[in-house]
Image 1 (cartoon, rainbow, N blue to C red):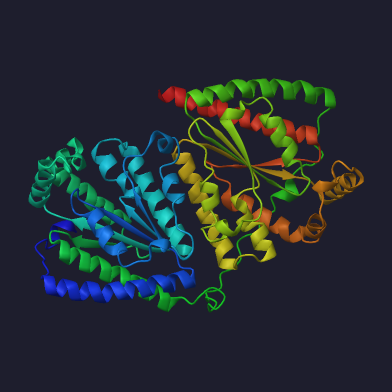
Image 2 (image 1 turned 60 degrees about the vertical axis):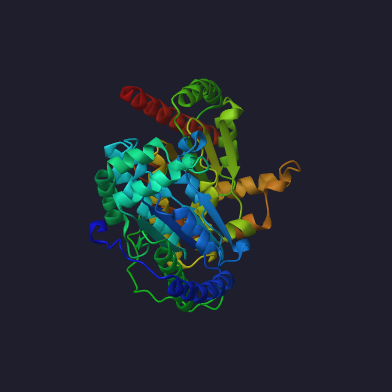
Length: 499
């Protein structure tokens, strides 16, 4: 791809000024249109060192309202960022609806510069490409406009620019030893970039190569392309609330697997055995918590279940012996105004734990395929699409070394009614029961259908679902702790074997 690019392209000053004036006016108009239509935009600048990424970003944003965009310069990941999945720092920077985010280098650093520096193990390259493509597809499926530029210059031109920068004390800091190393091994780095472009050039997030030898030509091409992309996006979409429904071919319903109907809810344990076993498990978990911190193993635990199924009680017993500095519990409610204008997974990416820490979610990202599905808060194609998106997110967490376990706390309808009435009769627990809880019981069958499909379609080897028989609270709490203990022991052994 890159070896076929004509890098000698130039533009005279007069033509440049005419194009920039026209496209600047157009771009300002289109930015306002995207804001009104609630269209989020991500613009990525990658390319050879000294190809002018910073300068081109500056040219582009001069035509925009500064209140509507953010610019992110992404250098090597910090220690804090290295303790999380590599896409975490970019998920947290995805723009809200109607805003634009520009990236001076991006998530592609891992498969280009880090790969060149041999910081990315060969066996992880395929996973990294997969994670990147799923990240971009999830965002674009949700309405993100993804514009990606690769700025290309020759080895000779790059060397000349490095020398010019090195010549002045004011700019010499911009050229590192690593930059010179990539210039000396230009063909090797070019091959790496070629493979990156080939692997990640998709219909939903295509690459545009910019011949960057001549700054004027590059600036005019970039601004024109951005304007064209936004114009197409606005023509294809109307503002929210006025969009025509998208017709998709009718597909047969997936095979219905009745997971919950086979759960034995008579399982129980005596109070004496419970006290003895819970104490042993909590002490063991306390030791394991120290070990995962030392080995920098992140842990993600998700709790879903029927109302009054005992999620809170299970979480309290799980955390009672943990060091509070090493875990955090995230209760998930309906999304707020800020969360609603982002991709639905955005708020959960913000809470991904760093290596060695535990994140416990009291209700999770599965709201998309449960509450939002049953209550009609999202379209059918959106919740059907979410199964793959969720699997990919959890796969990325696992690829980053995380232990991921999801618990469904299961009780029957009669047990739930008994617990509801008990809460109503107890002044200290009345706050736990609402009219909405009673209303949700009326949709029990619909929720059960949704839960069954969720369990079948998203229980994976890297992020399994564990159905917890919850009619007996004692039994449920022990099963949750025992599952976590066994999973941590297994992961610790795996990590130690690889040391």
